[in-house]
Length: 397
Image 1 (cartoon, rainbow, N blue to C red):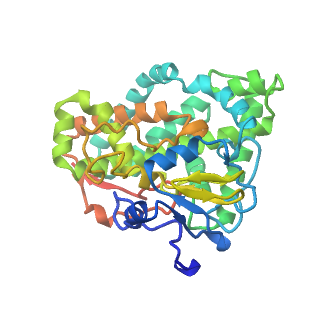
Image 2 (cartoon, rainbow, N blue to C red):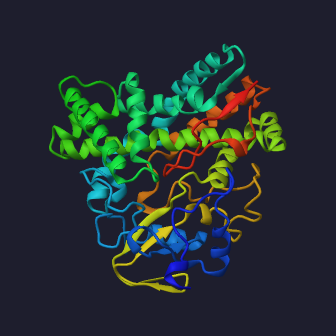
């Protein structure tokens, strides 16, 4: 295949709920193959589930995006500030990540479930009070819920939600260019740095206060490292879950048999959430790495200094891991999906995301049994960010 004929990332989705069709062909014909990104860089694309797990768990692949030939999706590297866990390797990655773990344990998330339920019910109450019975579910439910939850956990004022989401969306763009991305990150970094300083003087019962008093004040982390971690948590803590709630609602509404079964049997909820995570795979640009030495993956030798893009959406539709993978089936055992990544960079907030999805989606469909899409699913506009999702989701009931 000539270089000019290489597939280019990010690939466009042809339907709202399915990954680009090219992934299925590549997974079968050339599971480790060249792909084109910005600036003539041609990293390797990994599309099979087994190979994806292997790469993500292998310390011979680095996450440091400032390395030469790292497979970025923008013409220039994203802004680099301390505390960016997604772009760090051990031992610094391990040191900083351990500081956050206590606030994201299964036990801590279980303690947050009543808060999530209360917020969910309040938002649904507001929806039910609307006249006429029509609304944008993104504006009134799927975005405000995870944003309010992560603000509560971190200790960020929810009153600043419009500013927070606007800057987070700018950073997550794959269409507006690197300047928008850098500006979004810088705005949130400055905002959270100021909040962190205020928490040092007047701490509360939240993650930011614990970072300020237990880590920064003791010298275990710098203020810049803490602010960088908080930016990442704030962005990832609402962007991904908001998209999953939106697309999860569309998926269930367009699979009425599955929705009926879910309503009839609450015991199906945890498995249904795992299947939604697998089926949708909202992190659609993949996980990017660069080889530190020669490594064989799927029978292909990836040389030191070559980039790798692990396609989570291709891996999650691999028939070797998930029989009949393009069928949405809430009774499937989908727990081995890769939607939260794998290895040392697996998603720190996965328990929180699961709790929000397990609470919010069943409550929405139980309390609004007549909920339906106001326009056909194919008419919803995608928002062009690194997390696959829609700009609005018009529903009626």
